[in-house]
Image (cartoon, rainbow, N blue to C red; front, side):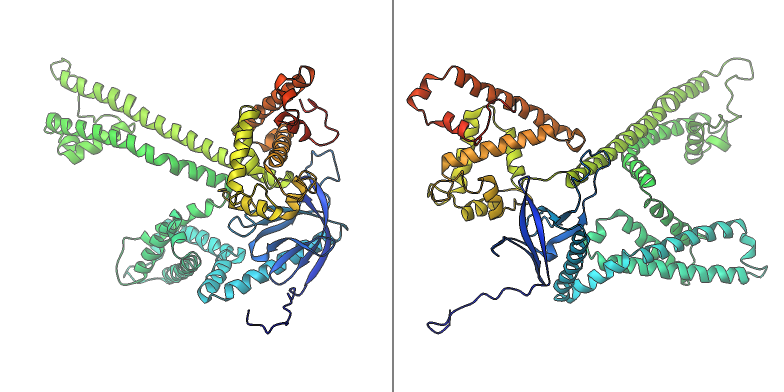
Amino acid sequence: DGKPDGEATFHVPPPEKKRYEINMLLLGEWHKRSAVITDEDLLLKQGDGTDVDKINLIDINFVHEMKRAEDDLDKSKYDKVLIISTNAKGANGGRTYYFQTEFSQDCPDLTNDLTIYSQLAKQRALSKDTLTFFQHKARLLHESQLFQLCTGITIFMNYITAIVTSQLPETLEDEHGNLTSAGLADLHLNQMYTAVLICELVLNFASNWNRRFFKVGWNYLDSAVVIISIVDLTTVRLPDFTAKIMRSLRMVRLLARIPALNKLIMAITSSLVPMLKAFVILVVFLGIYAILGARLFGQLVEEDFGVFARAFMTMFKVAGGDPWPVALHLVKEDGNMDGIACIYMASFTMVVCWITLEVSVAVLIDNFVAASTRLERNEEEERIRNRKLMHEFRNPLEPLLAQLAACFADEEELDQKLEALYKMMDDNDSGGLSSDEFVDAIKKLPFKPPIHMTESDFAGITNDGKMCDEEGQLGLEHFRRVFRQQIEEYMLRQLAADPKSLSEEEEEVSQRGALKLILMHQKKLLSVVAPDPHDAADPHGRHGLAHAGHGPGHVPGHAA
């Protein structure tokens, strides 16, 4: 290492900023730890000062105190509990940590310190890259409440200005075509609105450069509004009110910030594309009848059917509810019915007005309802995720346990799954997994985000090493015993969970898991009452380990 012989190498710990004595939740039990905040990390230490886990401060998404549910009977269940959510792409794999401070006054202090030091660490990381640093600053300014409020007021004022100038257009110019004082005020207001929207678009583009900017459909509307507003201020003459109308469209985006209205706008836009398909069919039928009308009645009713364009607009108005042209008579001068006109008008009414138009409206309504249902389902799934975050203390192995619990039919199949998992984790074929090997192997499993485990978690699932062998390692049978216990506890947690916090799929898995537990315990009870002859030849086989896996004091069939 380039050091002279005999020269000792010392590890200098990072300087402490803050230290708190906490309880950390691991596998449903609270363990005493020391939380040490440094410039870069939050270190979690045991009583002897050994580091058992580390959270990089730049990977902290948010820190907040858990709020007690109003319907919770245990009033003190969530007192002084702190939630720390980490980045899914960081070293902690998106794990959520739960701390409990010894003193209630320490909880807000720890929350505040973690928030501040996390922000400082993120700023230091950003300052190393100048472009990223300025992009971060632009995003903070663009997303600030003050800037968004100013932009919203500008859009609303433009909307009011467009209404006023439309109501009083004669006040903008005099008889010679020169701008009046009101016209000059309108011009200056348009310049101000354009300047504010340019600033908003530039900040938006800078803070979301470049793929994130073009992934948002609203940004295309904003860009079109700014371009037309700039062109309108030049010598190029656009149709009157073009820029004002385009800027007024920003009111739609402004209204979309209100959750209830945003839901309505999203449902409408989602149903437009299927509606356009039905509208194409409607246009085709209108074109067919316009061609027929121009050929049959072009000379008789020249004003409405003289050429294709007039005939098409006439049929469009009739489809919209307007009466048929007065000059188109169903009865001839001699008193007889005009068969061609009758068939033409009757067939158009049935094919276009009664069928095609109604089908188009039905398609619009059906897709609107489907889009609304989809949005409500997404909101419900989001509420379920939030409820889980606020009211569940998760086992870090839960993604793996959920997969294992759902893919076996009996104990024999479960043993095969666990043996395959063990061989995959024991990549050196040593026949044993130490705590370090187990933790590293779990992190390598193909889960997104990766499962983040620590040696404290390993100690928790092995009952402080009592379920390991003499060397503190997990052999195959010990591995099976540990995971059978963890799977059973997972099934019981799912069965006892609040149904509101489970999705339909999770609820179905929970019910199937309950049946598996009942059958497994029933089989164990039967093996006690009427032992299998094979067990006499192998008293320490798999069934013996299955009973031993529940630890001391377990009563077979208790969960069932």
